[in-house]
Image 1 (tube, rainbow, N blue to C red):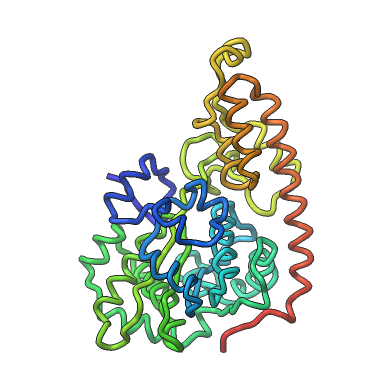
Image 2: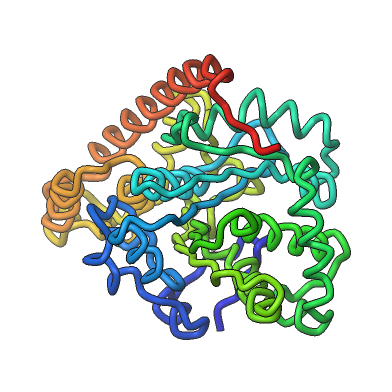
Length: 362
């Protein structure tokens, strides 16, 4: 049985079984329903979802829908999993979704001990510009702080009556007051856009965050007579594996974790030490070919560094044929990572100058 834990670092080994165990919808079944699926959708990085048809229908019929994501300003950097989420938010924003980004300052205080003042400063000075640098349009995005959104807090209190401790334990496993409060606040975040207008909404998340979606969907069913909310839709993306292939990329494994931003040379050095799908010798690899399916360099190409499908396919084919050796492959990956970090820093500096364009919910 797969373990889904919003606060853990365990790597999922069988995504097909995960879809079956949790009643998810394979993304591949909906690709033809969405206009111009992005590379994450095409490649199965976004591998599943829930209630995707109502989002596809809203796009097709030009009806209102929203997309919501959040940021927890608990550090001075973000990770590549966040980049995947923002790629999906960007996609839905381009399909005319009303876009909301919450700053989880209350959750940061409850679970990470970050003061509201510090969370605010980090959000304004780094996180919001970083999300813009990754592709969000600041003119079409509404930001808000949990601590300043009374509607979210009110919903969290109301929702506390709709879930029992046993049900919470069944969804999350470990019970802790701060996690209960955070989960209820997240349910409030997910649904609050519907207080102004009842419409479907999609929440792009990593699969480790699916317990929050499950809790919110349960609450919607139990508050139908009071609110008549649409069940929230979701897209789920795979974990970004650690560069040594051991688990999902995590700050607890610094040598196999690349942050955004990171010194370009340092991030390149980490890429040069990544696990590959190479054979024991060059002669053996030329004869038998490499194993890109087990290569963390190829995984970074696939998930983050190469958007062109033809370029990615050529790397895969050349590796399988033994034409592309690991030394050359890693040199290419190092260069791409350095270019990514340099480009991100330029976009981050530019995004910080757009502050007057930022819209905040009051």
